[in-house]
Figure (cartoon, rainbow, N blue to C red):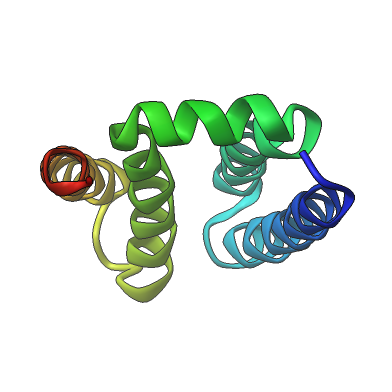
Length: 119
């Protein structure tokens, strides 16, 4: 991996950690300490492989396109909880899992079609 690529991953990791802190504090303010801690743990676990093992994580995301859906699932869950506070956490989680599953299937289908049509 070239140095420019490495610095791009470090910048992405730092921005991800800042986003994690902002979202966790927003969740703590709106829903309480437990959902805020859970949001911090989930987002931290999601971005840790990219920050710590950038090359390996990038290879895995290319090799397994459905892994990209994990990001969308977690982001959709957090956004759903923040935008619709009247919904229960369970309802938001189930909705996020369904949306994540749809994205995982779409990412996999698109990647396979790209591989078939590549020269």
